[in-house]
Image (cartoon, rainbow, N blue to C red):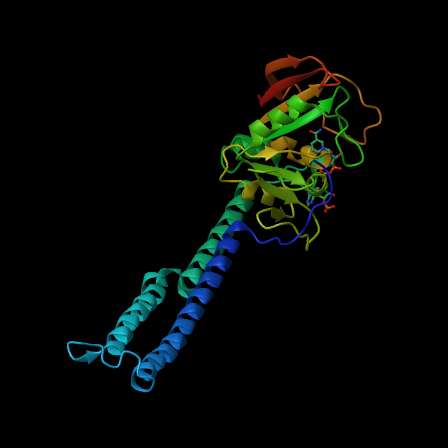
Length: 307
Ligand SMILES: NC(=O)c1ccc[n+]([C@@H]2O[C@H](COP(=O)([O-])OP(=O)(O)OC[C@H]3O[C@@H](n4cnc5c(N)ncnc54)[C@H](OP(=O)(O)O)[C@@H]3O)[C@@H](O)[C@H]2O)c1
């Protein structure tokens, strides 16, 4: 599960769609041009075949040489091709792409403005540079409704060591997969790099301060938590999947915590989950899983909801 991955591009899905459409148009026009050249050469060849080489010299339909029919039929095919490229697909042309791009930029600008207005910064010693947390939540305006933190933590809140997990709990991984599949998963750059490759069937949003960070196409790269939440705005339940730094920053925005409490203390850990403040969080469900051949530790799945 863990290892280094290939890195390619930071282009997001919308931009990618526009680029792909532009490339498609170029290919369509190239093919039409090639068709035209072949048609010209073919037409000359058909005429020469009949008049110079004498192929089908005597074959006429209604007194007209066969090559005339062949050329006319081909001409119709070429016209059909031409109409396809310049009329049927015109709505996907450069103008269309420009309009889409402008629309996209407009939407982003509006969203940023809206966010700026809706997110007054609440200063606290621990969160000097962050968006005001519970204001966002309680205001009922912009906030990632259903933002859920999902984590497995020891009794001492240990979550990792040397950029890796400390345990392997098969049923916990299964639950992680089943809860997060189909959703946006927001993570810090270090957690992302702990994966051998992106997890299937989930949209990855990776937070990094590195301006030129490269990730495979489809992985969304952002440079702060606010943009990460915005990138997942269409998702009714985006997940914060770690690691320690991101959990700490995202805790104030979350509505739900899906905690796997591993019933052991891990003193060798170097990364920790923040303390869950029970004056703000209410435990709503708890299911215990005993240790067994596949699970070295017993653990409990606990769901917390913000009070
Ligand atoms: N037990 C679990 O459920 C669980 C889940 C996930 C991860 N983990 C573990 O947690 C550990 C990794 O956690 P971690 O705290 O070391 O790293 P992390 O939170 O995964 O990533 C930290 C990185 O995120 C970027 N970042 C953080 N805050 C940012 C901000 N406000 N703006 C822009 N970029 C920001 C920075 O990347 P740059 O350095 O690129 O700027 C930073 O180095 C690993 O051991 C992993 O196995 C455990």
